[in-house]
Image (cartoon, rainbow, N blue to C red; front, side):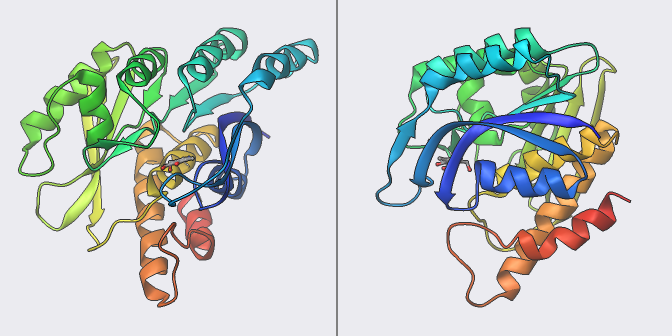
Length: 277
Ligand code: PXL
């Protein structure tokens, strides 16, 4: 069985980061090893939350794995709590990236034109560096705009604009850049990608449902990670992840009593398993 390591926080309640990555990657039939970087009572979109920083443990954990000769087929990072944590992740990539290990970075730090609580320009700079060391990055347009230091364009952009942004993202150093949450206002929402090695653009769209939910970026990235580790191509993995993420939103809006803080990804897991067949 393939084993990936995912490095991100655990928000006890909130359906994001590790509480999404673990079940989604497991459902893909891939072993999900975890490094919790912080424990929060909830994610940071709640009004008040606790934050226990686990930075101090990170390097010791990496060293212990190295001593035990533990290896990973993939390294997947999501929300990280500080620039220090990003530096430690850069070190972990040096320690654990072998031939055939993919590095997937979701620079989870911003949405809708704004940085999440607690992040600043220095954090963006460090996250940009981490993206340069990845094989695949999956920012949304807000995160891409912060990393490239360009104005955030919410809507009305065209395909040429998206392609330019993607090329600039790969100029940071990654092989494949994937922009999530792309829409050309035609009732479709999806992803647009550029593979620098093959000099090839590809995209995939599904229905644009009339609502947005917290945590869907984490579901998207976790599914890409699981599908890649399962041996699917990048293009196919991106498609599976779009279709599964849309299904999680469908399931959520079908349920009148749904939460405001995350999607009902659990009831869509059978669909994920079908998509992976
Ligand atoms: O969904 C990304 C995410 C992950 N972890 C924490 C968050 C967020 C987004 O706000 O606050 C703690």
